[in-house]
Length: 491
Ligand SMILES: *[C@@H]1O[C@H](CO)[C@@H](O)[C@H](O)[C@H]1NC(C)=O
Ligand SMILES: *[C@@H]1O[C@H](CO)[C@@H](O)[C@H](O)[C@H]1NC(C)=O
Ligand SMILES: *[C@@H]1O[C@H](CO)[C@@H](O)[C@H](O)[C@H]1NC(C)=O
Ligand SMILES: *[C@@H]1O[C@H](CO)[C@@H](O)[C@H](O)[C@H]1NC(C)=O
Ligand SMILES: *[C@@H]1O[C@H](CO)[C@@H](O)[C@H](O)[C@H]1NC(C)=O
Ligand SMILES: *[C@@H]1O[C@H](CO)[C@@H](O)[C@H](O)[C@H]1NC(C)=O
Image (cartoon, rainbow, N blue to C red):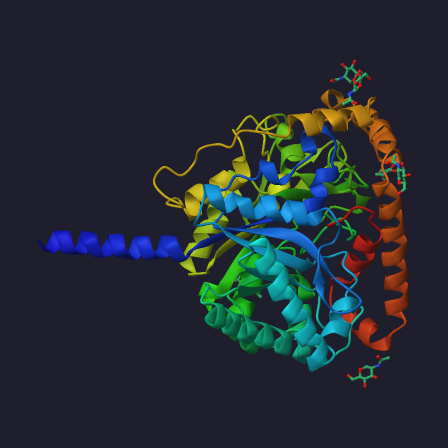
């Protein structure tokens, strides 16, 4: 009897834990522009793996309204929210902002109560018209480059007013209320400069702490971009550059642990080694090579990294609990099952609210690269984090419906041979040439080039602003801004 009660009690506890833990997955709509098997569309999303999916990104108009980032986005919003037909428990959010977003749009929008109200009103309309369950604010960062110092307080007002309006609208229309969420920095200096942590936490349903990109090839030595703990070599501010510190810092500033989600990168960061030294902290002179499908120097999708797993020795950074490998003169930090297990176990021990992943399209969604089945990275997270979601008969793999699109893509880049490039670095040159011709055939390249100039200009412009200089000098993300603004194709 007693035994039974204990078991039932345990089941209840386990049941309630499972239902409140979140696995939030970003969908990067730009992944549709990747060639061949890298091309990822809404129909590639598995509707039963993540508890929430976030559509990245939408835009803010000159009139301070939330708007789709392109004319065809509305169609994709419809299919995105159509995923809920196959899993009614799935929640969908629309993200606004991102790393390459012109943050002045946020700054202008929050500047007066009237402008914020316009944004909020338009957000309710856009979300409801397309069947979203809420909004994800991805402003990097309030009070940072391209914005005013007082945006820290105005961001709090935005969260508060959004939440109040969403509650009121839900009550008035007798529907489930829309939710407000945000993705925020994990860098101590930026947290201090940008957020009234305790206040925003009251208004947000959950908070994605961007615990990726702590380090990367914008620095002169190798280091893992998403380490769990500080490393033995860390000195100065570097001791804050890890998941453990960032999550505890958000908690200790007043965010409830259950609202804090830990970020998982379904990508590696690659460095070009400049000497024969190849450990952690080895000299590096820039980003590693670009890969065929993502085409961005130093940024390797999980599916572009996993083909090496069996061919090279995987090293473990023992104090930081994350792996890396060196392949010729490339140093690459990434996550694998081992580090996912440790990170998730850490997350559970500390009672954090779950995980979020950037992004669905970087996992081996079709299963043809890693030989670990479809979505090895995210299904593993699902299995260890939200195994019961959405029900006992959870994982039926999706049937792929993108073959035609992929063929069309192949034709546009007829000299593109991915067979030659994803297993062998020496042969990556084939990919290189063909990828360039792929982009030459696309108008996206022009956008990317103008984006590049835009961001570069913004960086220089901002660096003349004393407040911005202060902001970045006190943040070791300085080089990160610089680096990213010099990348044409970054998220
Ligand atoms: C760095 O890591 C060590 C060992 O895990 C830990 O004792 C220490 O508190 C950490 N320092 C900070 C600032 O988190
Ligand atoms: C990578 O490093 C090597 C050795 O220093 C150097 O010769 C090469 O030019 C570098 N490659 C890039 C793309 O920077
Ligand atoms: C693709 O290219 C082949 C030959 O280059 C051509 O026969 C075929 O019609 C093309 N398909 C499409 C969808 O353009
Ligand atoms: C590299 O590519 C060439 C030409 O496509 C091919 O002949 C060669 O076998 C490839 N090398 C390796 C090691 O895969
Ligand atoms: C690029 O866009 C222009 C006008 O927007 C169009 O005329 C042209 O055909 C496009 N080129 C390609 C390769 O899609
Ligand atoms: C810098 O910030 C202060 C308030 O913190 C403000 O008064 C001043 O105008 C700002 N300067 C610039 C150049 O933006």
